[in-house]
Image (cartoon, rainbow, N blue to C red; front, side, top):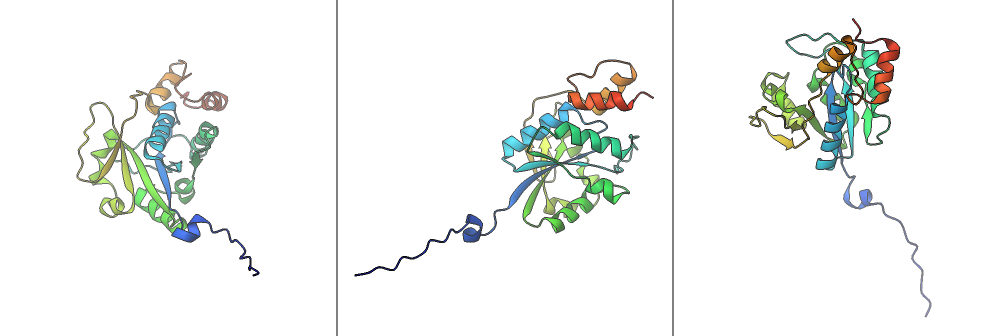
Length: 209
C-alpha cells in the first residue's frame, strides 16, 4: 500500500500563537551629559525585568518648573550615541529632539505606540521623581499607556498613588550636575562617564563655561 508524503510546513511561533509582544524599557532625560549611573540603571532594569531592550530618549526641552540649562541637543544626542554603542541591548531614539518644543512624555508614548503597536513600554523614573508624577502632563492617561519602573534611591519615598514596578539598583551617587561641576573645576571625570564620552567632552570643550 502506497503512502502519500505530506510536505512539512514550518510554522513560526508567532503564526501559531499570535505575534509575541516586545517589552521595551524607555529611559528619558536631558543626558547633560550621559554618565555611568544612567548606564548602570538601564542595564539593571533590562536584566531584572527581562526586557528586550532599553531605548534612550534625549529630550528637547524638559517640562520642569525649574528650568534647566542644557547644551545643544546635537551634542547631548551624540554623547548618548557614543556611550551606548557597545551594548547591543541599548538603542537611541531622537523622537523628542526631532519633534522640537517641550518634551511631554504623554506625546512621546502616544507616538511610539502608533509606530509600534506590537510593543509594551516600561518607562524608567528615578525614585526621587516618583513623588512628582501627579504633576506630570496627562498622568492619568499616561499610567494606562505604560508601566512605570521606579529605581529605588536612598531617602526617596517608595509609595505612590500610581502603580510602580520597583527595581533595586546599586546606589551610585553620580549626577550630570556633579560631572559638569567637576569639569568646570578642572577635575577628572574618568570612571564617571564612559571614556568615549569624556573624550568627546574634552574635544568639543563642553561645560567649560
